[in-house]
Length: 608
Image 1: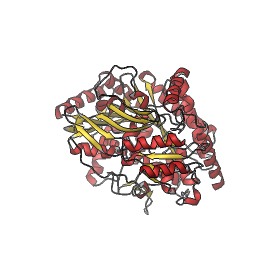
Image 2 (image 1 turned 90 degrees about the horizontal axis):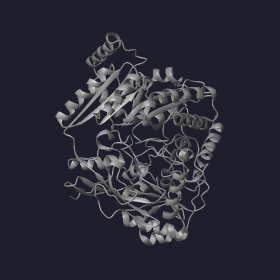
Image 3 (image 1 turned 180 degrees about the horizontal axis):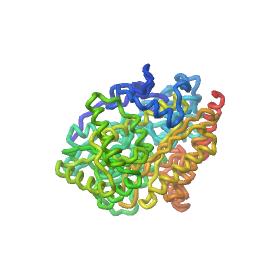
Image 4 (image 1 turned 30 degrees about the vertical axis):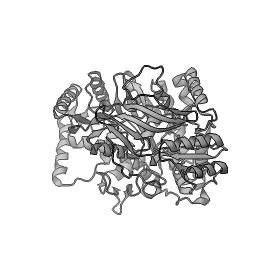
């Protein structure tokens, strides 16, 4: 079944629609309106156009933020602010002959020079990068990619694949000591669904298609992949494969490694793919697993076949309120043990509950406000839950009507054994939808001297509570020792569950007024938090990947022999280091990330 061609949501010139120095769409942001309330602008989200009356007080009481102290971003960067491009004239001439579209426009180059780590965003607001891509190319198909890789190998040019630009591992940053020409290979024009196979329930796509376009086009045919990472509006299929991505509904649909049937990758040694598209094959180590998680170091992922399913007949949200986080974790563990988890079940600690409550929009009617008051009265007065200890889980059920009803009953029955009570469908839906706007909040924080980021890990069930408690305590302690003058935000949630453990997300932010080096301070503290995670049995990453910022822990995680094996594969497939981003085990200068951070701190010190 052929799919009709559609224009992608994100245009070729990304700057026409997206912010150049922040998250997401230009027309969508949190701001302080003329009435002194937080408002979310635009019309794209359920929260758009709404005000959050409690947010200002929460910002002040939790982190010491005052509206009198603002830190505006620098104006748009121009060509004069951006490093000059290194040009390989022979490569450029051959690229023209091949008919491949390219640009050396300063904004095109800058947009593809970074992902969305704290120091990358801070650099855009306060300074500039020392090294950015010298050229951007837009292949239209697998054949174009083969030409690009062949020419890069011939002329010794570095290639850095670019999908949706949502990386939070420093993977897209250019090694500052790289003297060769660096080319960003933007796959956004490779955005087609090539075919849908309703008999085998598979879809074959070009790798540049972004998540929201893939799911929308499949839905028009009655199908879905069910893969919904938090970044699905902007992240690409190729990026999911390259980072071993995970989605919010993985309990039903699986992680990306569970969905992939076939991958085509163009490497300096040639095209790598299997000869058949079968559900399983015993033919030595799975070559797909060399590519999944390779983070752009081995080649260009050009085409992917995924499993699909018919659209679920029924979708229903829910929420459960627990007396404390400990009971919530025990409930999620039992749900996982009985293998009855809904499509999504996520548990937030009390600090995150308070944060989410502050983001609640103004009540649309007196009746809504009255009902909310009754719910609060029931939970806190009648059930006796302490509002400063309670924990909330948000749920999403998908399937047939009968499957959803049966799953609801089973999950709520288990929750009751741990003191959990139903919190309502509206709270579940609001919690799920907040996922897509939460990233916009960091830009508001920047405006008022707040730096922050999320980081995640995976951990066995018997270590979840200890890890959460110890990491949050470590964050608080490190802030105090480093002279952070205001209480930091240190919060966590359990986002994905497995038979043997869970994924835990941490949100960490602080008011940096009075600090001369906020980014370096943040990174030092997060490094301590990662050490605490490892000491408590956690991993270096559940799905964000390694990139450059977590390379230091890779050998400890997979062993010296494991790193040696990765290097051997890299050496064979890419002996000239054409895909020389420096991610994972690449040969690029290892301290690049800290050097760039030091540069941003210098900029910040001069500003203060």
